[in-house]
Every structure is written in structure tokens, then in C-alpha cells.
Image: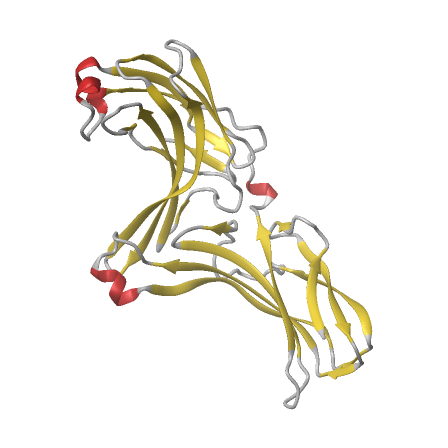
Length: 311
């Protein structure tokens, strides 16, 4: 015996004001009786404090009580029987009923390190006390409502940056410190989740040959624990811009595609916040060691759906 949930949309993406439709598929070797088929819809923000940022607080609190966004039960069928073989039972429910006040804002789906925002639907086929219930769970993805989206495309805003041996806060190779280097460029400070982060950079000079140029995309998650804020940064993905010693004065394009479920519009809520940063990393060739020169972090903030303003 098996049961599964199939949604009407293959990408499983919905907006809070749209109905979620699909079907419950059962595969049975023989017919069974049931005491009702129900859907449980749960959405929450799950918070977990870990890593070195929390210190002693981590051992005291650990997992923090989730923030409930939605918790509702939908009756699909009253008691009856399900025949043998494959049976499809259609369903439809709304996340927001008219006039109903939500428990919390409908944040977009996000899978992070210490913070995750999930929307789950669980089917439960109750068979009484003598038989184990049949159940299955499926995650669906929520994006912001259309009325919250900008009517016109967001115009990109570029920030000019530069890197030299004097902008680094860590030790460098002696030949790099004495000979110096300079890298300049610009990067988009306002981008959509559906669009790439774009920009360009130029290696103007470098006393040491370059091995590679990479851009790290990081998440910065902050959680309010008691009277303190635990903040943790973690790497999402690395995009290589150049491999080998690049020509001086050549303009290199920056083009970073954002992973959807690992990113979301930046959130600044009371108990937690989610921000995103990019880090430019240059690896120099050296017989002694490999040294990474890093630019200052550029913070990405979101004021609208799928918008990452970069401060």
C-alpha cells in the first residue's frame, strides 16, 4: 500500500493568494475502509543556533521554537472505502481564506544553514485504531504575491570597487606587498532572484602571477536569542571568473546565477534576518604558499520580491 501527493504544477511554485490544487494517489493491493482523508498544511520558519557565533548561548538554547506561518486542516473525503489498484483523489485548498488573518507574513521558501522557511502539505488517511494510517508529505514553494512585485523592471544600480595591497587586512606575500597589485571593477547592487548578478572587473597590475579569480556568494543569517543576536555566515556557491594569470587591462565579465531555494529576498524580521553578500577572492601563484586576497563584503538587501539591493 502506498500514497503520494501530486500537485498540478510540476515546479510546485504557488503564490499565497492562489489555490493549491493536485491529487492524492493511492496504490492498493486490496480495497480498504477509512475514517476520512485530510490534508494538513503547515508552514514555519525554523531557527537553529549553531557554529561559533553563538558561543555559550548555543549550548543553552540550540534549536529555537519555530515561527508558525500557517497551520490548517482541510477535509478531502469523509469516511468510506478506497478500491484496489490506483485511485486518484483530487483536492484544492487556499492558503489564505478571504477575511482570514494569517499568523505570520508569507515569507518566500528558503533553505538556509541556520534558518529555513518551508511549506508542507501532508495527507493522512485514517484507518482506525487497529490499522496504521497512510500518510505522505510534500513540500511546495511559495513566492510573493503579484501585487507586491514592481510594475516596471528594476533598473540595475552599479557599485564601483577596487582592491590593492593596502585594502587587505591580512598578511600578504612579501613580493606582493612590495610590488603591489590593483584590481578594479563594478558590480550590480540591485538584482532579481530570476536575474544574474552582473558586473565586470579588470586586473590593472600585479607583481605576482594570478592563479584564479573567484566570487563567493554567502548567506548571513542572524537570530535573536534572548537579548543577544547570533550571526553566522556560510558559503552558498563559488563562481570562477578567471583561471590562470589574466592579461592586464582586460575587462572580465561577472555573471552569477542565483540558486533559487538557497536564496530569497533579504528579510529583516524581529526574531531573525537573512542577508546575502558577495566576496571577491584572488589566488596568487607562489612557490612559498597560496594567499587569498579578499575584497570587503558587499551586502545584498531586498526591499521587494526577488530583489537584492547591494549596499
